[in-house]
Length: 364
Image (cartoon, rainbow, N blue to C red; front, side, top):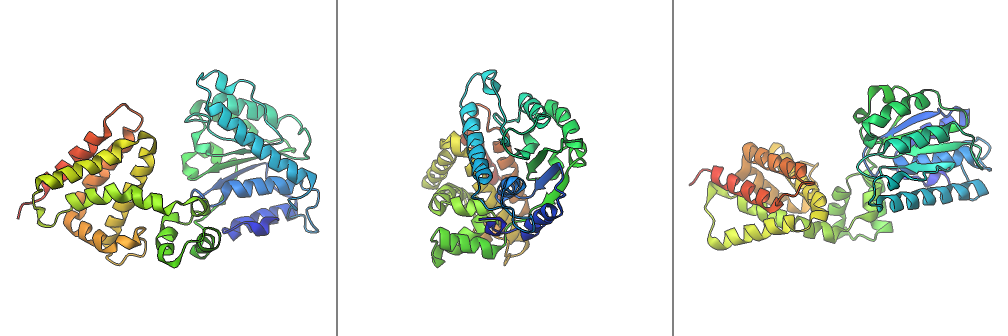
């Protein structure tokens, strides 16, 4: 156990180890980069290394077995359990009652936001001495979700954190944070994990065979987290209605639909809107397909295509839709994203989009 077990982003790992070896870990840090590339995992590893009782001769690693490392694991588990419990509380006031932060604490959005009371508690905890570990580490995941009214509360403690406290902000896109927050942190940039590493995880840990590996590798998209959780069968099923919609609206020569084809189209849009709980995932799948169509329109042999098993169909859609058709679909997806949290019949949105695309194509 130790930093050698971390997969990918070796430059980020080495930067952390260099800081530990020099004994110069900043009090405020920002880990930024794509989702699923190990930002939170490395933050927890750094917290363990700061507190490990057997850090090795260079002082730049952790054992994972001493009492402090085991206690750190317990703190992480307790943080996750507390967050899950609070998210289930319906009463907004009670969600933040009795907040207590441990020596290693994960702070994440309880609602859509990281709330003001969560940041107040972070400040109060940061300025108190750790209970059992030498160094307290407060990890703020999805820092872009910090409520705007709470951001000012964070600035002072980021600028001058106590010697016994390290604060690590985690955010996919650093520019979603205020410049004043970014400027107070040492930024560590993460990149998508190398394909060879993702392929090894998919083949060795997940047991993907050669026949499914190419698609799984592209869908994982450089994310270790997604590679480890990917349900490829579910992904293929989820994209099914999108394929029907695209097959229908991207008709060469603008041929009109027969009654049975209209029924097939409306069955597909009904499936797309059937489960509001999974609508966001469905929209992401549609966005990936649409991005692939655009990639093929620009470069017929693009190596950036995700749905590699659909390349002939992607080319057909790209030719039939053209740039204007793709833009209309993109606008429709954006409209659906914006309407997610409203009591709107999403099937009507998809139906009208399909009808608009079919009506805009020239007749042969």
